[in-house]
Length: 433
Image (cartoon, rainbow, N blue to C red):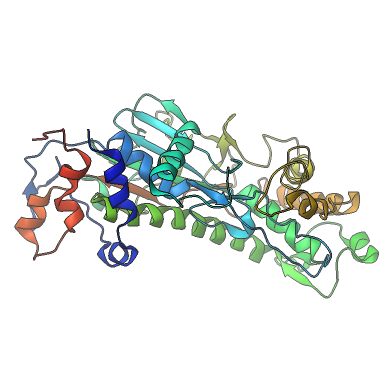
């Protein structure tokens, strides 16, 4: 086995700019074959799966806990309080909108399929990765302790049209590779954004019909909402999807940059049907990740809503209605052990006093949030109404490259020194063929 301390120290000291400018999609891994064309090549090397250490590093790069994040310190709607827009104060390696923090990471290899969920971990300090040796081990141990094995086999995505885009058939999810799948929850994202807009007085408008999204007159009359501040429902839904996708892409790009520093091949790509990955009921023999779906005869495709008992959307069928889903979000923020419970820790010197400044939502605000959310659900039969509840815009594949392919077909410097030295640094006791 490699000297873990030395290997991780070399990784942590790798220059960021070199990783950024050295980043390339290196699709050709050990054991692969391109049957014809000007770049035809047959690998003589056996596939070499990622080691436990290699996987742990990439999982930590994508979703590792980096300490506390600092919240949103001020909002003029309540100038004497800390804002309450964040749903979690757990700082991770990739940012999320307003600290809502919905993403998790699934991954799959020759030995099984796994879920890492660090989104609600209570950090041990303000900032991690201050000491290379101690922190690297602790960060990876924490991600491992929040990783669950879901199956004993690789996720079953056939290399066929409709599941994987044709140019990706020959290299995607092949033996020896690890497929990482960052997933976001658009239902929690949209509810949390809805809270932000309502707290700042916006009237959510169903711009399809030019009317408020629900019976909002009483909330305008009371002053909770401002009739002069209209915000289109379609924009809110689009913003929800865009922000979820950006968050997941940040996770993926962290992993891809780390792969350059490690000397691994692979890439971030969007060439797999996300419904197939989730396990769409349109394909009875396809388990995928085992997600639950809801369907309607008027929809083009079924809607993934969650993985039972592990990663469930804030919407039916996991809640009786959207009022109950709002109640759950309020509990996550203000209930016992919640984000703004003064008895819980945080990043500030006097976290108890800072959190005590936050006034939980009053009954009127909760009712207004439920009215809008239920309006969306009643109109569309799902939440959000026009975008998927669960979001998986792209995947990261990591594998060991076959340098002979790049030497045969490409000019010099087609791969980095880290690729050339990878086996020696990360597998020095192994002698792959």
